[in-house]
Image (cartoon, rainbow, N blue to C red; front, side):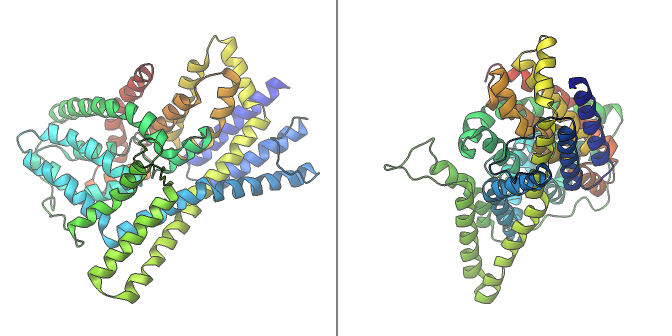
Length: 456
């Protein structure tokens, strides 16, 4: 029975990877494959994951499980992610995101004598922007409009300029990130605490390593392929911002509030704490007030609230539903004994918890490359972490952190990822060439992450 379940599990994972690679709807693929695995588990006489309230009939329980997951995720992590989506949409609507990018990237224009160093400096700047604007494709397009022409004018190639822009999205982190929300939820930790105590200590040295890697890799290939000082039509177009520059603070405001009013710093007695959802609502209201004062049009200002609700709806349709369907997929894997077989197999091979953690991290990195989506791969396998950690007695925080970062790193090496396709198309280069340029720095970065985890 174990052999049969292992074969079926591997076939299902392979089928899911194939379908997602060929651009089938990820929600439909994950949901249907998860339900199918649970049906097969029932036919094999295996047990389904426990329901809070069983219907009394296994067939009905399959749909009751979907209802329970939707109610749980939608009311908790789902609501948080939706308010983040609404906030990001509203910031984009009023021009605050453009103002932040303009302010942060302006100093790079003064680094004309060190073009490859200037390009490497885009990475930490962009990573900060990514925490405030947690959309890989959205940020990529913003940076293509603002900093890409500057980098090309400094004398580096188009592919090198785009490579550092996409590198800004390789660490999906910060309280406003959907992956952070999912990871912190799975390990039962506050998102701000997870960000400050676990993400930052690991990603700061990793960012420095990536800056060095991109500096040498881009300079080497530009010289090798004679790509320096390319003349590109329309690259001198100036990036303009319609919103006041003080709007640049608005996208950063949730991050500031969450750190000031967090359990970590304890600035106030008695303690005052904010959760991510509340912070996003406060900052959206602040943006609306500023827009009302600036435009002095009450009807338009109040009407702009529609942008926030639409942003929430879009994120529900794309991200929250993906989390729900991925949770069903993971329950299907559990039903077929995936975790038990993984634990038994790793023990037979002499792998401890760290070995399994590395194996899962590499698997997610490769899955992101195949799927072109960091969310799809992480949401699919992230929910397995607490159970694996409980069975092997390891540190679930370290495991889920490496898996989470690997998912966004793998996305930047995928020629079918949205951010890679969009930025490559604007620059007039091949998405496959761009993915290959990112491959060396990010594979070395992945190895460096394993080494740094032993320190942090």
